[in-house]
Image 1 (tube, rainbow, N blue to C red):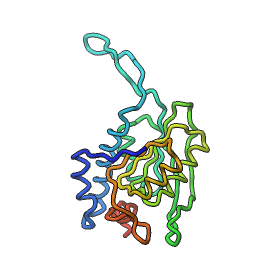
Image 2: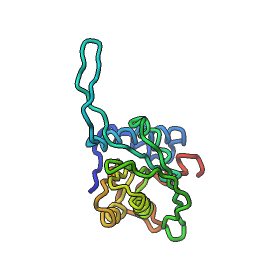
Image 3: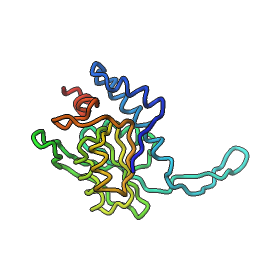
Length: 207
């Protein structure tokens, strides 16, 4: 199952994000803002529990997040989304998963993984990657999380395409996907069209 946001604030910022003239500093700000808005929408169903909430005049009934959350950016571009989600979920743990695109095959090549094991059935892993292109990195990353024991996984990305969404939903139909946009297609070298180019290069100024 996937959800494409239609929020006006997200659509407005996507225009500037796509622009190849947007410099890395501004690009990073836009990625962080978009990730915040997207995360806010995607996390509306987080489980909560009742807690007392003392106030100046009485004790109110409050709610606090009941799930143990782990944020897992896919290196390196996923790091651009991490601050935003950490801001929304300051108590979340962070794992990292390194996957590099093979430019000849367009398939992902894992090179590093450091992810905490789930604390229990309610543990939620939130996978972060700005792009969902072929779906290879996302599917491999999800498989890694499942091997560790995660049963609840959420994938957040900024730009997706039909090919990547189709593959992810076929291989992992139990994983919810939230994206800021669904673009037209992949080109002959497996980049999203119209897309935003290489998210990692644009984030870190390595074009």
